[in-house]
Image (tube, rainbow, N blue to C red; front, top):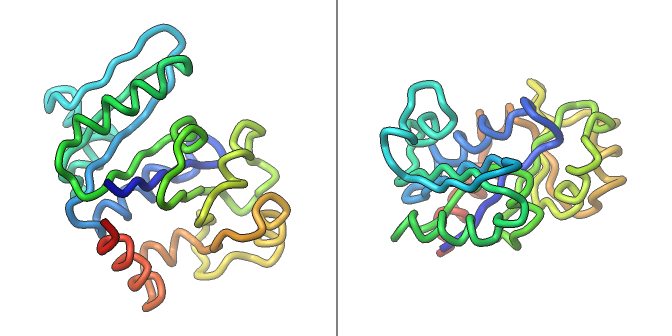
Length: 186
Protein backbone atom coordinates (compact mmCIF):
# COMPACT_ATOMS: atom_id res chain seq x y z
CA UNK A 1 0.00 0.00 0.00
CA UNK A 2 1.31 3.43 -0.95
CA UNK A 3 1.54 5.80 2.04
CA UNK A 4 1.08 9.57 1.71
CA UNK A 5 1.39 11.78 4.78
CA UNK A 6 -0.04 15.26 5.18
CA UNK A 7 1.47 17.34 7.97
CA UNK A 8 1.70 21.05 8.62
CA UNK A 9 3.22 24.01 10.36
CA UNK A 10 0.43 24.45 12.92
CA UNK A 11 -3.23 23.82 13.60
CA UNK A 12 -5.60 25.35 11.06
CA UNK A 13 -3.01 25.75 8.31
CA UNK A 14 -4.83 23.56 5.76
CA UNK A 15 -3.78 19.95 6.36
CA UNK A 16 -7.34 18.67 6.02
CA UNK A 17 -7.94 20.84 2.94
CA UNK A 18 -4.93 19.28 1.23
CA UNK A 19 -5.89 15.76 2.34
CA UNK A 20 -9.35 16.30 0.81
CA UNK A 21 -7.84 17.52 -2.47
CA UNK A 22 -5.61 14.45 -2.61
CA UNK A 23 -8.45 12.04 -1.79
CA UNK A 24 -10.65 13.60 -4.47
CA UNK A 25 -7.97 12.90 -7.09
CA UNK A 26 -6.56 9.55 -5.95
CA UNK A 27 -8.91 6.72 -6.79
CA UNK A 28 -8.97 3.78 -4.41
CA UNK A 29 -7.18 5.53 -1.54
CA UNK A 30 -8.24 5.28 2.08
CA UNK A 31 -7.67 7.86 4.79
CA UNK A 32 -6.42 7.84 8.38
CA UNK A 33 -7.00 10.87 10.58
CA UNK A 34 -4.65 10.82 13.58
CA UNK A 35 -5.18 12.90 16.72
CA UNK A 36 -2.76 12.65 19.60
CA UNK A 37 -4.09 12.22 23.13
CA UNK A 38 -2.49 12.17 26.57
CA UNK A 39 -4.28 9.23 28.15
CA UNK A 40 -5.99 6.81 25.77
CA UNK A 41 -5.89 5.08 22.40
CA UNK A 42 -8.88 4.48 20.18
CA UNK A 43 -8.89 3.31 16.57
CA UNK A 44 -12.17 2.99 14.72
CA UNK A 45 -13.71 2.70 11.29
CA UNK A 46 -17.24 2.57 12.74
CA UNK A 47 -19.40 4.66 10.37
CA UNK A 48 -21.33 6.09 13.35
CA UNK A 49 -18.08 7.61 14.63
CA UNK A 50 -16.33 8.31 11.32
CA UNK A 51 -19.19 9.82 9.33
CA UNK A 52 -20.27 12.50 11.81
CA UNK A 53 -21.26 15.54 9.70
CA UNK A 54 -18.68 18.31 9.83
CA UNK A 55 -15.87 16.14 11.23
CA UNK A 56 -12.65 15.78 9.25
CA UNK A 57 -13.22 12.04 8.86
CA UNK A 58 -16.66 12.60 7.31
CA UNK A 59 -15.17 15.18 4.96
CA UNK A 60 -12.52 12.62 3.93
CA UNK A 61 -15.20 10.05 3.15
CA UNK A 62 -17.21 12.65 1.20
CA UNK A 63 -14.08 13.65 -0.75
CA UNK A 64 -13.75 10.11 -2.08
CA UNK A 65 -11.80 8.05 0.43
CA UNK A 66 -12.54 4.38 -0.15
CA UNK A 67 -12.38 3.76 3.61
CA UNK A 68 -11.70 6.06 6.59
CA UNK A 69 -10.16 5.28 9.97
CA UNK A 70 -10.03 7.66 12.94
CA UNK A 71 -7.11 7.03 15.28
CA UNK A 72 -6.60 8.73 18.62
CA UNK A 73 -3.49 7.65 20.47
CA UNK A 74 -0.71 8.47 22.84
CA UNK A 75 2.82 9.07 21.63
CA UNK A 76 3.92 5.77 23.20
CA UNK A 77 1.28 3.80 21.29
CA UNK A 78 1.52 5.63 17.94
CA UNK A 79 3.39 2.91 16.06
CA UNK A 80 0.98 0.16 17.11
CA UNK A 81 -1.98 2.47 16.55
CA UNK A 82 -0.92 3.26 12.97
CA UNK A 83 -0.30 -0.39 12.19
CA UNK A 84 -3.79 -1.28 13.39
CA UNK A 85 -5.36 1.65 11.49
CA UNK A 86 -3.65 0.65 8.24
CA UNK A 87 -4.84 -2.94 8.69
CA UNK A 88 -8.41 -1.65 9.09
CA UNK A 89 -8.14 0.07 5.70
CA UNK A 90 -8.09 -3.34 4.04
CA UNK A 91 -7.45 -3.60 0.32
CA UNK A 92 -7.11 0.06 -0.62
CA UNK A 93 -4.38 0.99 -3.09
CA UNK A 94 -3.00 3.70 -0.84
CA UNK A 95 -3.56 5.72 2.30
CA UNK A 96 -3.56 9.43 2.98
CA UNK A 97 -2.55 9.88 6.64
CA UNK A 98 -3.13 13.27 8.20
CA UNK A 99 -1.11 14.35 11.22
CA UNK A 100 2.36 15.54 12.19
CA UNK A 101 3.17 12.66 14.54
CA UNK A 102 2.64 9.95 11.88
CA UNK A 103 4.74 11.97 9.44
CA UNK A 104 7.59 12.01 11.96
CA UNK A 105 7.33 8.27 12.62
CA UNK A 106 6.69 6.87 9.14
CA UNK A 107 8.81 6.72 6.03
CA UNK A 108 6.02 7.56 3.56
CA UNK A 109 6.17 7.18 -0.19
CA UNK A 110 5.27 10.87 -0.46
CA UNK A 111 5.28 13.41 2.38
CA UNK A 112 3.34 16.66 2.04
CA UNK A 113 3.80 19.60 4.40
CA UNK A 114 1.41 22.57 4.51
CA UNK A 115 2.53 25.99 5.69
CA UNK A 116 1.30 29.54 5.48
CA UNK A 117 3.20 32.34 3.78
CA UNK A 118 4.95 33.14 7.07
CA UNK A 119 7.29 30.18 7.48
CA UNK A 120 8.56 31.65 10.75
CA UNK A 121 5.19 30.60 12.22
CA UNK A 122 6.14 26.92 11.88
CA UNK A 123 6.01 25.46 15.37
CA UNK A 124 9.35 23.97 16.44
CA UNK A 125 7.93 20.44 16.66
CA UNK A 126 6.89 20.67 12.98
CA UNK A 127 10.36 21.55 11.68
CA UNK A 128 11.34 17.86 11.62
CA UNK A 129 8.50 16.99 9.24
CA UNK A 130 9.17 20.10 7.13
CA UNK A 131 12.76 18.93 6.73
CA UNK A 132 11.71 15.53 5.36
CA UNK A 133 8.79 16.67 3.18
CA UNK A 134 8.79 15.83 -0.52
CA UNK A 135 6.24 18.54 -1.33
CA UNK A 136 5.69 21.78 0.59
CA UNK A 137 2.32 23.39 -0.10
CA UNK A 138 2.10 27.07 0.81
CA UNK A 139 -1.51 27.85 1.69
CA UNK A 140 -1.91 31.09 -0.27
CA UNK A 141 -4.23 32.15 -3.08
CA UNK A 142 -1.37 32.97 -5.45
CA UNK A 143 -0.45 30.44 -8.10
CA UNK A 144 3.27 30.56 -7.21
CA UNK A 145 4.87 30.99 -3.76
CA UNK A 146 6.49 34.34 -2.97
CA UNK A 147 10.29 34.32 -3.24
CA UNK A 148 10.67 35.15 0.48
CA UNK A 149 8.49 32.19 1.44
CA UNK A 150 10.40 29.87 -0.86
CA UNK A 151 13.73 31.06 0.62
CA UNK A 152 12.41 30.45 4.16
CA UNK A 153 11.34 26.90 3.24
CA UNK A 154 14.74 26.23 1.66
CA UNK A 155 16.46 27.01 4.98
CA UNK A 156 14.81 23.84 6.34
CA UNK A 157 14.42 21.70 3.22
CA UNK A 158 16.63 22.09 0.18
CA UNK A 159 15.03 19.47 -2.06
CA UNK A 160 11.24 19.63 -1.68
CA UNK A 161 8.98 20.69 -4.49
CA UNK A 162 7.33 23.94 -3.37
CA UNK A 163 3.87 24.80 -4.66
CA UNK A 164 0.71 26.55 -3.48
CA UNK A 165 -2.71 25.41 -2.32
CA UNK A 166 -4.26 27.27 -5.23
CA UNK A 167 -2.16 25.25 -7.66
CA UNK A 168 -3.28 22.06 -5.91
CA UNK A 169 -6.92 23.22 -6.19
CA UNK A 170 -6.55 24.34 -9.81
CA UNK A 171 -3.91 21.92 -11.13
CA UNK A 172 -1.97 22.71 -14.25
CA UNK A 173 -0.58 19.97 -16.49
CA UNK A 174 2.44 19.29 -14.24
CA UNK A 175 0.32 18.90 -11.09
CA UNK A 176 -2.23 16.76 -12.95
CA UNK A 177 0.62 14.52 -14.12
CA UNK A 178 1.93 14.32 -10.54
CA UNK A 179 -1.51 13.17 -9.30
CA UNK A 180 -1.59 10.56 -12.09
CA UNK A 181 1.82 9.22 -10.98
CA UNK A 182 0.58 8.98 -7.38
CA UNK A 183 -2.50 7.08 -8.54
CA UNK A 184 -0.55 4.69 -10.77
CA UNK A 185 2.15 3.84 -8.20
CA UNK A 186 1.14 0.75 -6.27
